[in-house]
Figure 1: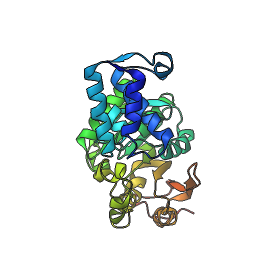
Figure 2: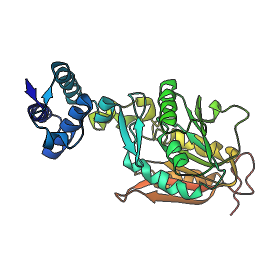
Figure 3: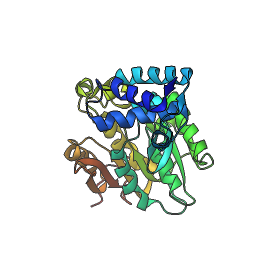
Length: 296
């Protein structure tokens, strides 16, 4: 018989290679054990001698082995938290990160009753669904080139009881939108923005496990951001706002992209670590179809 505290100790030992810090090892070993056994935080303290069945122990060791091969914890448990909400994730989507909460928090004040939101490169849907969850009488559309990602987003919408307010379309950015969709008050996006040459230098949990298609922003990392800046004005209502997540070294370049295309109030916002993280801009009331006429 394997007791709960013994399984936990074994998990901590097996994670030493991938997680050098004791606190991180203990956290992930505990979370994986809770996931397999259907237990809670207090179980380790209140039921240390609880039996872990053979099948549970085998499954636990399988997950520990995968974690040692740099599969992120969220993919192993199938979920994570974002903006205080539970989200399902799979290897078809990026794992929602605290950095991206900065984008949601900046965009949220722009949500008024009846606002329509477009989320480009929606992935798990975490940005769009968080905005809808914390707003009243708003609706939104998410697009993604990956059908597998959209299945995850749809599941999240259902579990957050937002299926009646969120719609998802598969395709390349705005090309996914049917003719009936348009006139958005707010556009948000966490597009691929990592330079192609940099991806393989990232930590293995990102470079090896997360979908490359959701990371690769082209030679300078700005391919998708450039395309979004080119067309967003056509999709926004006059005076509508756009918020796009960027790399920490892309603030100046992203600002120039939006300013050159006639947006105003272009700003770069920092995350909790003090790094450039989001560029925001406003569509001019005088901007035409090209989005390039400067209204300032």
